[in-house]
Length: 136
Image (cartoon, rainbow, N blue to C red; front, side):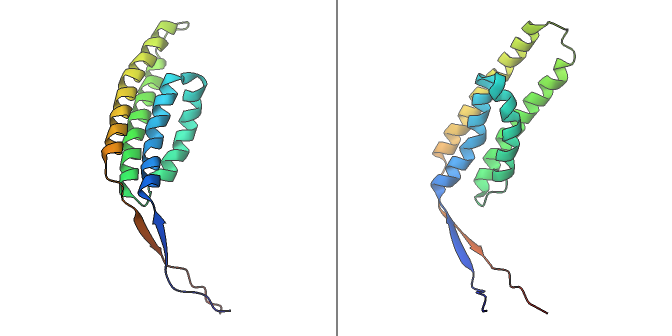
């Protein structure tokens, strides 16, 4: 059997790259707007989105994903640590924390979505070299 050793070229469209770049920011907005249960679900799903998009062939996707992740994980981490000091039954504190998170994450995510929309998203060709297996 003969194995092909010629490189294969795959095209990543600019439109798909832009769609990948907006995912984390949209997830952040939805998670803050509906914290129970979507906020908790987003905490897990965001890790999958981050893992898929951080090393995307289009470097801009990785950049926008990383920035959105820094904001989300930084804010949620801060409020988890701060929640340790909230007295039992202190729902007012939780509402204040949720409001602050919304005031920080929503406008910043919208700003990023505007930047992503204005950015130039070109198609990228990726050359994949097949692995040649030798039998001994």
